[in-house]
Image (cartoon, rainbow, N blue to C red; front, side, top):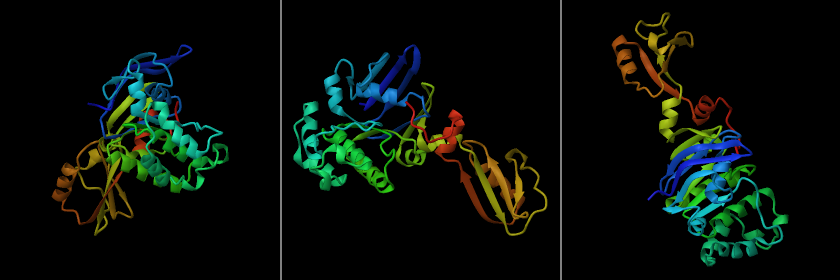
Length: 308
């Protein structure tokens, strides 16, 4: 059974379409990235999954339960760390965490609660009211609150926005740990290097449409620009014949021959041809674009945005 199934999901606000009939599935146990620039529709999609925004049309199923017809079951199965900081201003951290699982009809589990407190560094701040917490501590509390009822699917909507490097690394370590224990993760982030490192699969939204969805490594490999650099023991003065289709260039005073590899192509044919040329090769390097380059290629917009 899949963790989440989205079918023909659509939502408009005042006649303006925000999500345009998208379809995607998240498998149990994976870390799935939902990326996109401002206005792409990611946050609207997440809010519909979480039950915060009504569906325009379509269907959302979480672990086999329809999130409209079986909303009590789906709310218990999903935990959400929203992009906006949402806190109970006049409760202490301790009070809020003790109460929050009850909102889902789940009994408080002191052992699990203490584990979250320890892992997220909240112990020294348990008796502070929310108004007294720093921005980073509020974010840590929101993560603990989202996990307090032990959801099977954790949605992280820009969880590291505005937090320090230490918390960011600690959070990703914790996310990997709970993922290994069986929690499925849906992540949005404008730190594209984080998405590339963390996510098994990635979907990219743009103007409400789903424009790409693929295993992270395959997506980057298929759409990235790659170069093959051949370092030579003896410099060349002219480019050898037969390499024209790879747009060859001589650099470093003729001691480096650079070839451009086709998107998603294999290097075997090129290497075979280079062997036939009997070039005095002393080293070979490859260089590949990253997810940010692919993101810009697909959307035409620079990465690092927090779409709605």
